[in-house]
Image (cartoon, rainbow, N blue to C red; front, side):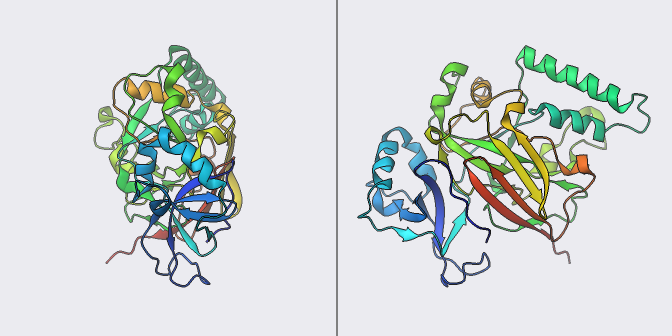
Length: 338
């Protein structure tokens, strides 16, 4: 397992299990049942025992966020409780969302890079002209206040240190490290000004995408095929932690970094987002009803594989981190075919 990076603030939340062989906490060793845990100072408290409503998963904690948050603060400072060392624990995806809302084309530089990468060989524009035109489109979208959001499947969620299986059909699997907001209570038609009141905290998501199947080949007018390109099992490594919103000064000023086999590929600030967390939550809520534990993925910064001309393949290791949220490490494994 990768070295576990401590998150910002006095505590964070996660989902854990105890390795059978604690001296060998590899991801391929057996582990016991999972439990929601409070992480503070390199130690873990089992919340299924520490909280009076005995939650079996972290989503149950988030569902009572307003009432439980003060209790969590107090527990984090109580040295008399049954704390266990983080070492020897297996860390899983922090929670299981019911809904995943994904923001597309939300980082200015990322969209400009994609436009250039997907240019037709017959495109008469120069690279500079193409960049200028899409930059103007980005500016217009921001001015007209129109985010772009689609829906993902919870079955894509996997742990922050689990292997990622690359499907045999995926010709161009790519990475997209993103800031993810976790919803704390039902939200429907909330304003931008009140939207952050519905966010429990933040975590890291890597929204893998097969670039070859983003657009339909049989009929271009159909448009994008998000089911095919983004929703393979395990295509969303999540975590390791849910960091309370109160522990981050500004989600609009965090560094998003992804390294591929030790080489930095993405390294961008969330300042480059066209639409911040509050705007996305509000926009989604105008149509859908957000539920506790739902994820709002805020989009990918520049630096994807399609930009570098280097897509994911068997044996690749991705190290992703976001300021204050810790770090994840996942290894790519080619799907075994008969």
